[in-house]
Length: 209
Length: 209
DNA sequence: TAGATTGTTAATCGATTAACAATC
DNA sequence: TAGATTGTTAATCGATTAACAATC
Image: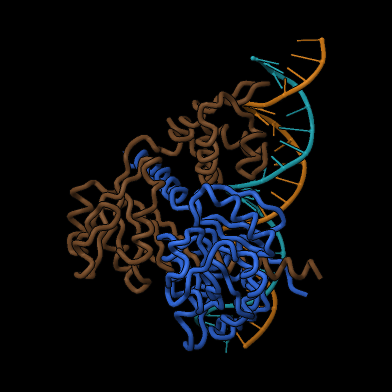
């Protein structure tokens, strides 16, 4: 049985994975090395890795390739995850064109849009399908992850339809909080990030004076 | 003198701001109301607001419009923030076209790209400028915030140039960790988010069985 | 053996939340 | 007065980190 991994650790594992990918085939690396490239504390790296089955060797470090595999396993990146992108506007297109999916086992199984003029157009080798097909697409293709890239006004409805169709995780890029039951929702919002930066700008300003 | 606001609270303030914007002009609202729409605990809302100058009225609640103003003040959203977007690919274009900037005082002051073929093209009413102008653009236009929307390979260099040019906060959309001194960096990464969702998918699976 | 580095403990720090007196 | 809701305390929970024995 798998150990429960703390949220803060889960959020850092993808960062480690990226750092390890850059070092693939370079033998071993120490928690100190990994900490430096990931921008965290070395104790924290060791603590985080202690939740995995990872085994380092005292005096030597961790085997890079083995550790990569174990981090992937811990995150559950053991099979293909088909995802659906809802909304084929600028953002939906940018997401669909984002190359880095495949590397971690994610694949864009469908892009849908309500706008009949967009349906049938092609994005990154895929044909935009109609929003009316959403439910059948999700169930036919075994999609568990949905990405909302619609305007805010439609986000709640889209979220509900995704959940009803059987999606189990949602990544919401619309700048609004949606409320749906029984699924994991993560929100990514540009203006939230900018506002957090604005706060720190002013804090540093006060220190400077 | 301004009180220091905990990071976790700062991260929630933009969410409250959004919820309050939806209720603008509706008189008062309770911490319970706000908590429900923001998806957090009511005690937490009150605790968060206690770091602001916000004053609620016992038995009544908070004045929506007044509270909005105080949250904005606390975040330092008191003046215009010109920003520069580096990279005019799919992502850069999506970001530039994102409408929600202005509402909080952010404005796209410039979009730059290395690719000579993109320079001169127009995105959302703005002309793409050359990457060689980056330094002068940042200093001439008083830009404090830079957004990196380039491929990973260029992110580090772009980050360093932004810092050297005088930018004080960076939002990094490239899927890599950059290391720069003396500025606040926030990373937004699609595949990190997807990997976190993947972890929770598997966790829920185990519970279901 | 000497040097390096892990794995884990324990101290500390920060965040969340229930509870309730204060008070509108 | 009765009901509602704040502001704050104190308990709890979770996350970080320094320190160091174990051991390669």
